[in-house]
Amino acid sequence: MEEFKAETKTHEKENQSAFGMYREASGASEKETQTLRNVFSAIPPGLSAIETAHEMRRKLITQGFQYNDRLFRLQDILKKKGGNCLGLSLLIGAELLERGFQPSFRLITRPKDAIAKKEQELFDRLTTGGVLDYDKPKLPEHQADHPIYRFVPLSHPALILDGVTFETTGLDDVEENPEWTPEAEETIEVSFQELTGTVYSESARQTKKTTRIGIEKAIELEKKSLIIWPGNLDALLYLWECAKAIGDEKTAEDAASEYMKSMSKASSALWGKYCISNDPVFLNRALEQYPSYLYPFIEKHVTLEPDMREARFHFAVAAWCIGNSSGISLIDFYTTHRSDLERLFGAEEAERLIKG
Image (tube, rainbow, N blue to C red; front, side):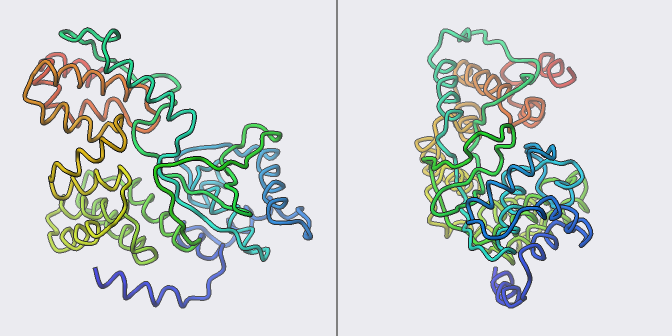
């Protein structure tokens, strides 16, 4: 993907401010940017970086901003008064940079927090028996009202101040301490500029891909992301998927080649390598790293499983996990895996679950 690397050098020469980079990636106006910055205008100079970040968080909370896992573009944070880990890390990070501080940023893959532990407990209960009938397992009909588990590796952008992770998404309680240093599957250092590149990548995932035009728009956004951060594995994998979908073999081959060069041992990277290569070594390594990672779990224990009883039971395990996941849609799972659903539970049951 030489064109991405060449264009990166040009991009790095641009003398943009932090908010300029974030605004450009978001597609926001200068007025929207300034309006959002005004939230922090009363915070006085003379404070340390960590003190300033605490005051910024306090301002967001007192003005009604809340965590929203779908909001990361600057103008959406302003309009809907909420943001996710990407958007809030960029917002607070940009303001700190504009004030002369030097925060750093990390991408934390699969933090091993309390939710991760509870998720593994649920998975173990479902897979070891006693919860589901092995021969006639029932399937969930709808998503849980307030799902908290993941069953996919969370990629969590984080703001780092004085070597401590400052959690930007904790907007429920002013008195809660947002400083934490979680154990994780993988942690990598990223620049503010590279983090703005993920705004393009996340925007690509929110485009409608039911038409060729939509897929081409997603490809355009992923290429912009890779101009800024050529090593963004999520962007490379999604670019490969989109290019394959419309028969753009050259783009797909280039993206796959760059992806396979990665030295990452994270479960998500191993799963991506399996998707590209179909090499079962990567599939097994992904599951060794993260046993309850549902995409490789479904591939190995449902799609590729020749024993119908085993496949049926594990399909049900996956369905109940997804029904309790905040990151995967149950109806999308049933729709995407309709052939497996019909094969294991019958066409009538598949129709009933999908149509609701």
